[in-house]
Length: 115
Image 1 (cartoon, rainbow, N blue to C red):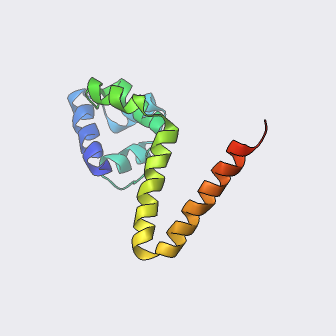
Image 2: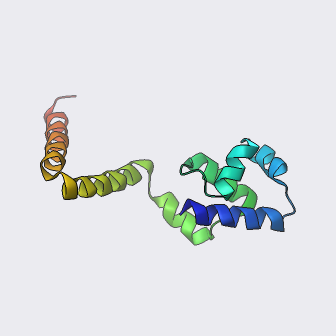
């Protein structure tokens, strides 16, 4: 996915007539990070950086941004955890069920505790 975003960043940057150094300066990031992002050599990107890219290049359609913004960081972490646990269950079902039981116990403990 980041490869596709990187390609789009490069195309939009060039359409705006911006060099790597100039856009990196505007985004307050290193030239090498931006180059690695454009070429798909990095596999991480922070939401705050995506926000800066959106402001500078209008990377994504507005309706996609609205849908994305409706999900908060907690929801995104839950989705990621769900995905990771499903993958773990395929390889190590006992460990996956153990992690789920620990979370359930923790939630029960805190929801039953007095504030």
